[in-house]
Image (tube, rainbow, N blue to C red; front, side):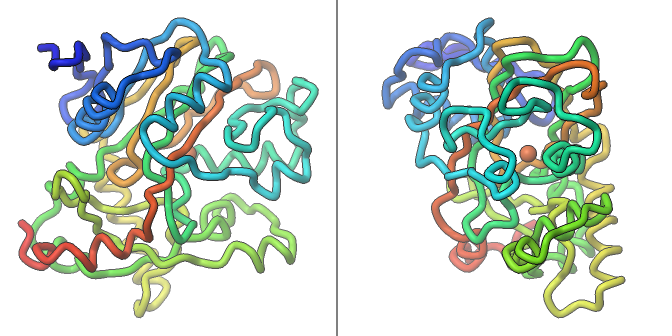
Length: 307
Ligand SMILES: [Fe+2]
């Protein structure tokens, strides 16, 4: 079925992700098409646009801007290494130096980006975390490098009532110290100072659909008011539940694909590939959710009685 503006959503998985057809996102889109894309995001959590040709920087920024407000992304790690892309508004998800050479094994940026292989929600370590992320494939390796997405709404729905009662109202603390730290990453004094843990609700409510979802991320490393071992066990238990295969869509990339996901209702992770041998060049534009996530919990009165 096509909607009134000619978009068609073809599901790619039983619980999340659809291919969006009938729109050329390299060209400007109308407000009506943007509304239809938001509707698709609300329903599927992940949309795939198979463009066949990678978007230019201008096209990618125009497309994402037509759906909301961009988040600035220039990280300190990238700043130290020098920028490969011409704008800080695109995040460089690649294994390449500013001169387009493969990053060597010991490169700090390479090691930092290994955290992308842990399940996470983008920018959950920020006070105002990300809404949508849109990732465009410019160069892909011959094998590996897929991206997996897990549906946090389905994960909430399938929790038993005892666990729902246990987790609703809890607040987790998120920081890159916790995620990269599990991989043994060594932080500078400045990073240790800058990566202040941010409180986030463990259960979120989508402002448009009213659906609840677990808000998990490898960045989560504490639960406010809980002893550390119990907090880590609960986060691990919930993450194992939320990432079981029936909740996971695995995207096999083609050059030109743009995959956009809603960080409020999904987690994702990159799959390994031979990054010392093959280039992988992906570029991400990100929309801010515009308000701290805790506000959603505070303003949704039905959470306490949600089934
Ligand atoms: Fe990510």
